[in-house]
Length: 137
Image (cartoon, rainbow, N blue to C red; front, side, top):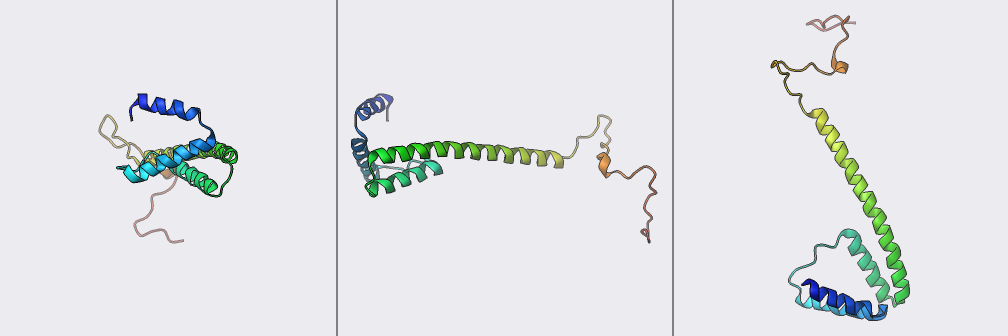
């Protein structure tokens, strides 16, 4: 849809009451079901859930004002959940990054020798080397 047409439709919608706007939504969804060539993939899980709740409220003959208040609260909750999801994804990416840096082999030193293993994996200097037959205690 071109921007001019979208702006014109939005100006017309801004003047309608909630009840009339829901009638317009019903008609748009009817046209979409009849003529749409493809589904709208831009709706995320939270958005689809909110639309389902809104449809159930409308089917239950709940007033437009109550639906509007409910959807406003759900919109705020979706914002919080989106933030939590983004934070969780960031933490997961940090963990994966840290784990991969621990398992990445060290680059050879400039003289061509391999770097020494980390200090915690080395034997103490006063420990005797293990015997070939194993230590019996």
